[in-house]
Length: 165
Image 1: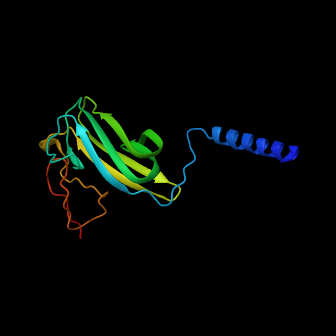
Image 2 (image 1 turned 45 degrees about the horizontal axis):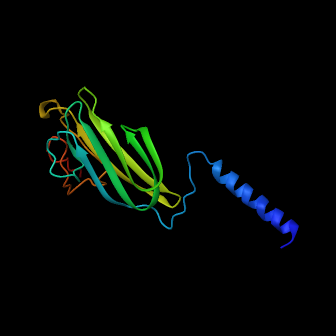
Image 3 (image 1 turned 60 degrees about the vertical axis):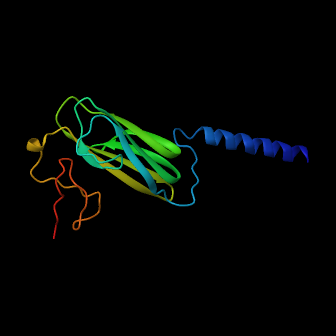
């Protein structure tokens, strides 16, 4: 190999390394397909109206600490939101978890995670509340299930979701 070729290869490697290092908080991610959430759970706290770790809507107590977790089939980035505000991000993983410390007040919280890569995205959402049944809104709806009829989910107060016609 000639001296010019060696210098060219060294120069190309330096540019490649510097280029990768200069991508702040966004590692290179190469995926064959969009991510699909294949597993999820929430654990911790002292929940009510929760039958198992896959339940998506239930009651919690003020001060509880609840861990939400998802697993995907492709290396992905994860963006976690509480009531539409981004609170945590992770990159280039196949699973992600977020710990939510329930505030010392009455409320309803939507915990949303978006798993994404350059091919697409998938979502999961939980709804938790510290409101007692008598404090709950008269009508509560949850559209993340993508349904308006034949719904099987119950709201956090263990009431059927409305049917829309």
